[in-house]
Length: 191
Image (cartoon, rainbow, N blue to C red; front, top):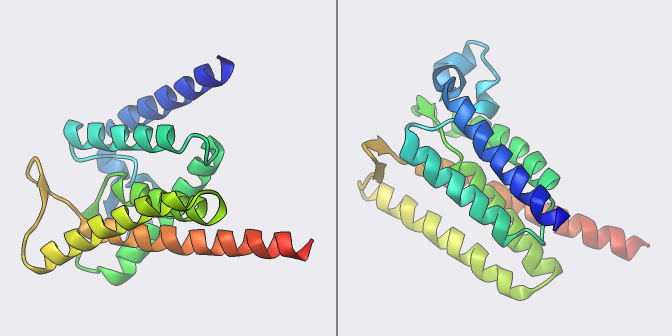
C-alpha cells in the first residue's frame, strides 16, 4: 500500500512539474540560437516543455504509461537520472547533426530513449520477450524517418513532429543499454 501511494505521489508530482514548467516554455524550450548564445539550460529544459496542451497531455500520458509498464524493471530515480542525461545528449546531437533545426520541445525523444534502454536491458538481463518492445520502438522510428524522407511531415495540431529527436533517442537508448548490459555482465564475471 505504501509503495503504491509513493508511486502515485511521484507520478502526480512529475505531471504537476511538467504543467508548471509550461508557464515558462518560451524561456525553456530548445532554441538553437539561444543555446549558442549561452543559454545552456535549454539543452535540458527543452524536453520538459511542450507546444500546446495536447502535446503536453500525450507526452505526460506516455511517460506515466512507461513508468507503470516498467515499474518493476527500473527505479524512479534511475528514470530521472537517465532522463536528464538523455535530454542533454539528444539536444547536443540535434545541435551537431541538425544545424537547420531552430527549435524543439517535448519529452518524446527522451521517452524513445528510455523505452529503448529499458527494453534492451530487460531483454538481455531478465526476459527475452522485452525485445519485442525494442523492435516496436525501432520500427516506429524507422517508419517515421522513412516517411519524413519521402516528404511527409507528421503534425500534431499544426506543429511538426521532430522525428530526428525520436531517432536520436532510440540510438542513444540502445547504445546506453548495450553499455550497461556489457558493464553488468563483465562486473559479474569478474567476481
